[in-house]
Length: 356
Image 1 (cartoon, rainbow, N blue to C red):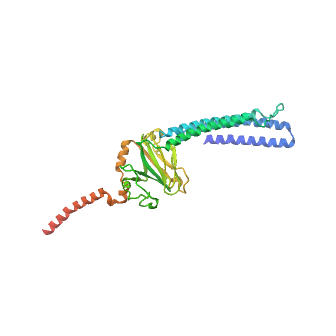
Image 2: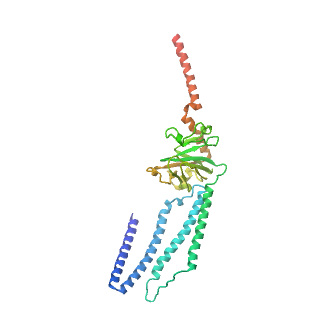
Image 3: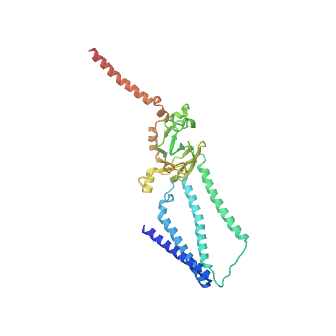
């Protein structure tokens, strides 16, 4: 708190001095006082240098204070996300050098070339050489940055490796629904008119046998470390956006138009807890598209585990078909048969006692 107060006081002092200097300059102009005007120019030139130095110190200090709280301070959690980090660092380096360089030149020129009696202003209307320099060079740099971005985009949206797992994620106001294919490795068909928030959240066509082993849950998306995963993304109401900040990826969820992307998780959730020194760390899915008054609460959770843990988890999941139609569940039928067998001895014993 003391640091912020100190910074605020320094800024206020600078503003007061600047305003006094400007007021003095206006008064001198009205009086026709040439000496006072030149003196104010020197003061303003000096303040320009002071502002430049304080500004650079402020940028350095804020970076030192807050960089650890940014995502770039933690390694990307996906193999492909590392490419995004590299792209961001290259972009920050190029734009940072240009920004800082132009600011130094701007403020230094204001100080160095202030008004003097022995100095005349030089005007030139046009320079083809300068026009070429500040047009061609930025265009080439931007072209390189765009090409790097397009290469990454084409990679993320291309077909994943053959051993990739597939998960369907559907956005709704205000949550996410995850669907895994069963042992057949294929999703059953769905139709939006079949959607029932209570019994059929995705509008699954139960007549399609491929849907009988599909797994659906709305709590957590479970992924495997080191195994590529392809996300098939959709929405059942408005436009959402699947934001995977730790994996450095995002993709729109559009009603009626499936979109896809894939990535390979690098660290399990447990490993990220150790890396971030945060025992409460979780991979979050955020909605990066304003989608209604509950947009702020539209978060999902991803749990990245080892293959063994995933196999145990997936074995415990019950196909949504059997959840929706319990009478089709063989385990329920077996339980009913067991109950009947247990009841028969009791009935026989009762009849025997009655005869006696």
